[in-house]
Structures are given as structure tokens and as C-alpha cells.
Image (tube, rainbow, N blue to C red):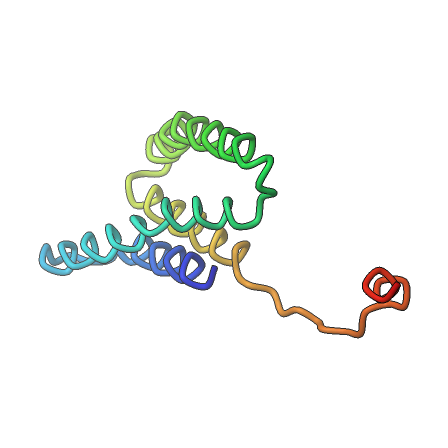
Length: 127
């Protein structure tokens, strides 16, 4: 999960920096880093979904994931095309970077509190 979060943060930063770079060589490096970090998203999200879903419902979970994936592939060009038409091309990069950074924040691992199991929980294991 940390790798997915980091790849989203890296992609967001690259998108935010892209409109600020006047040199083609820097843009080529940015595109290479962006391809690597965005390319991690597909297999990592698939792995995560399979890991957290119950084994008897994995088909449903993957079907829902693919439905959301296809819907986003339809909506994202419409939304960001509208942003580009209204605010210019740089705004598309800034909006994309902001969305990716936000998704990195959403997918960050949360600290877990470890506490003692309750008495009723332990009764299940000690008949």
C-alpha cells in the first residue's frame, strides 16, 4: 500500500511541475518518471483489491473495479477537457496533479492501534 501511495504522490508532483518546465530534456525525464509511477497503479490496485476482498466475492469486486475504471476512462477526458477549455492547458496539469496528490493522501496507510482482545473474543478460542 505504501508503494501505491508513493507512486500517486510522485505522479501528482510531476504533473504539478510539468507546466513550470521550459526545457524539453526536463520534460522527457518527467514523462519517464510519470510513466513508471502511473504504471505501478494498475497492478498494485488490482493486487490490493484481491487482497482485501473475500475469496468468494472476488469476481464481484473485480467487476465493480472494472466498471469504475471504465466509467472514469469515459469521464476524465470530459472533465479535464472542460477544465482545459475554460482555464488553459496548464490548469489541466495542475488539476491532474491535485487529484493524484489527493488520492495519494486517501490511500495512505493509517496507523493501527493494537489493543487487548475482549473476553468474548477469547472465549471463541478457549472452549
